[in-house]
Image 1 (cartoon, rainbow, N blue to C red):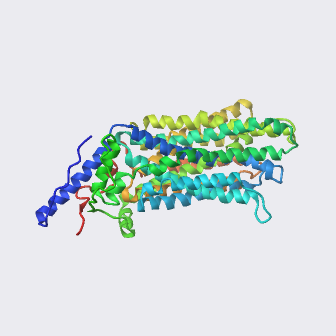
Image 2: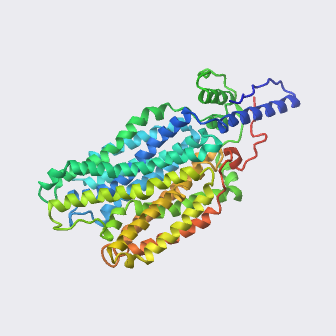
Image 3: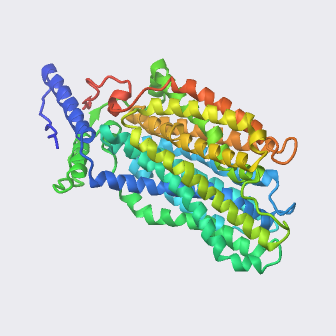
Length: 538
């Protein structure tokens, strides 16, 4: 590990003050170089695992509702044993609305009070809200669906807060050469979370098979148990990870550039990157420096420069365009599979056997989509993101997605006319999942975690992510209002065409973002690093 130079003393003359400035700059750069050039270690594995559990839980909690919505329809639906359009929309859109709030609020707070202080708080919000959903009940003054919607919004706030915190902690602790892979490995846990929600669905449906088959349609009691278990089990991984979240150290970049305590930051780096020495203690003498400080005026000054503003526009709109399709598909995959009659059960729709087959097939269908497209896409990104680069992957992804949605939309009727055509549609659907993740779904997460200076890194990420969730909200509302135009699920083909248009716009927004591979976070920030810190005024 490179040595971090010690501070030299100085007493007042212009020459000596200049020497202090140079020395402080040298100490800061040396400290950052230790992080940027650090060999991959157990500490990086720990950061990856602790952050990954959060994203696993995020995805489980978000996408489990895709399965649970059908179950809720059997228990609480009063028209055809399914939720009406507004009920289904409410329970699906509540979480993205909460995400938007959480990403903005926690993103801002992480830059103000610190990454460490907020890390774990958002996980506690998720745990409490997830458990509360599983206990939701009916009352004269409020319906059970209303209670679920409220708690899914609160859960969404916690999930939203996890995005900037996990991304920034991962990027600020990572070495330059492997930063993309570390952040991608964290984000890839989403795929396993979606997989787990479908797998748990299958296990629980199978466990209650005999109760379903022996019940009278619509099998209210066993299905009520099933959806509560599927949703409620989502809090288990969060509980297991909470201790590690609360004990992870503050990032040295926050200590250096926001708390502006050079001595504490250099001691922390030594402790983290070389734990055997364990020289850090809580009584390290503070050595504060003057450095650019986050203020409203400074925020405006930084982002009023086109070179910085275009990055924020590029990261925000790219995420917005991606989430239009990602959540439009991800939270409605059951509807889309039903629309093409893929895996739909046959027989009497008012029989308990039909209920069991329908729930089982929905879970299996979501499992197949995860295994065939979502999970492989993340890990192919992992292999290429630090060699090929973020920008080429995002451009390629948006381009391929545009083509795939055009085919799925304009050839929808032809594909839906035969069994082989339906199989081809599902194959194309899996390809879209693959190229979303080996494409913009991964890179829109990675780039904002790298592209802004430390004092605005979490805020900029939060703005970008919240803009993405605005796309998810618009997509959900639009999907719900459009899908049944002309008949049940008749508008699906045109929704695919709309998705194609947004993927095309994502190609152009990608041109605004920089390539960040193999560059230090300070280099990417577009700020002059010479003389970045100075002696604090007496």
